[in-house]
Length: 311
Image (cartoon, rainbow, N blue to C red; front, side, top):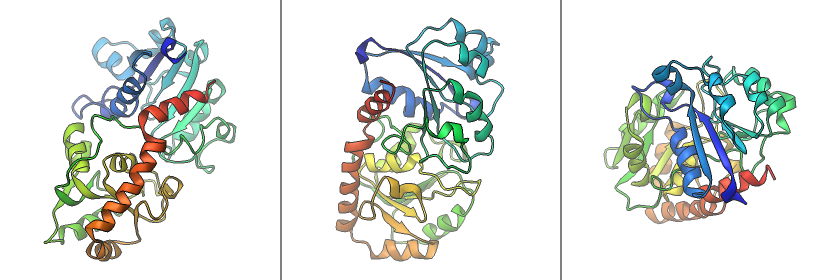
């Protein structure tokens, strides 16, 4: 029974391991979403950055003394403060590795170093890219009903009355400045722009409020590495009945069909589409995508589906 499970989550506590930036997204995406989905499960938290910064201890010195049925690992890049494969191998519980970003060069070696001991790999940002992920790891990924979905804290993302016509929140990189400059030219629309947690110093509460209160959320899938990702912003939006506007090509098509988001191809095309869409059309698209959220991305559904993979 799920209520009898002991789960240990081994992750960062702070974004980039830096207390000055704020709490890591993993708190809402993994810890809180799991706790609210399966409230009877016993969850132990082990934060490797907090152990180093506040107690001067590496997680390897603590982890061997933790007993759990399931260990969920989320690494801080390829940092030396991550738990070592040697210690992970010694643990007796089943092991799930969650990878929020699978586009970085370090991911190949890092996934490869733990795959032998993994029961399951999970990618938040889309189906595993065969050009990056080691061959021996591919068969251990969860699959299309799990990979590409970032579970959200239901206290942060839910439908709410709209105040903004369109928003974009996130770090400025790649081609994003071109879209942001175009959005600034919309003098008759209510536009909300922000740099997210790192650039804009937005708290999770303030960030999510803007997503919830926007009719449209612009999402740009291109990462700094040139790879395209299924961003967590997509699930944040559809959970809020906020219509996603997505630059193509994008892995979003693995989650939503073309009637469940607004596709665009360039900054100029974005402006054309914004000016042509009626409020009724935007609401219809958002409502259709919200049903996908309820069917596939709701955190309770997500975590039960994920844990079923271990049975």
